[in-house]
Length: 282
Ligand code: R5P
Image (cartoon, rainbow, N blue to C red; front, side):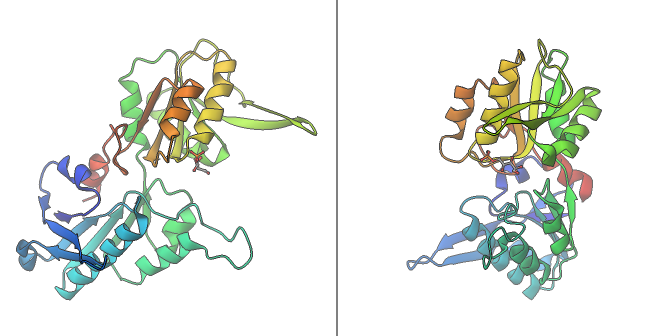
């Protein structure tokens, strides 16, 4: 399979086997507009996989994707698309009147290109993948492999809320570990208790698993709760490590012992590659 990318080159570097890279070059005109050009090897190919992650600067990565698709369409090349991190996915509904539902808007735009196949990875909400008539893949099996190598003590896999329970379950099942989620209970008008719903994590290691770490607020809160419960090590990981502003500092201050995640977004914590998912699919 031929493969190309502008934003996910570190992931493509890890691909093994029969994947052949078609280079794509991006630069800016003096007025700030973007310019995309493929290597001339592109002229002889019939089908390609674009791997383009839509992390910051999101709008630039989106425009790169559109230009890449259109240039390849002009050459009559069949296109498969894998979007490791889907921008705007958390704006998956109208929270306030008259606002745009940008996650769905972007998915619909992608859908209009009529591609051979479209994939997202650990999408925040499946509505987005459905709006682009695609399929969603998961980095959770790779995350489980990573955690299994860490020699954790009676590990418990925890989802910080109900939204990531399915993800935590995939990891726990593969590790043959227990899983749980944190639950908020209102004790009085102004007191809320947050704790694991069922499992006592005292003297055990815990890995909190989510789809996204953005500002780190969710993970920091979860970690404080777990440390108060007597948990030993608290590891914090997600498929998509946005790590906005001082997220790292915030997590460390909360007592997180280890941060891990996939290379859907490159960062110094992105030790788990999604290259294996690509190899399985194509
Ligand atoms: C929210 O529903 C998501 O699953 C993540 O929990 C959230 O995006 C994490 O954001 P932050 O790191 O800013 O708390």
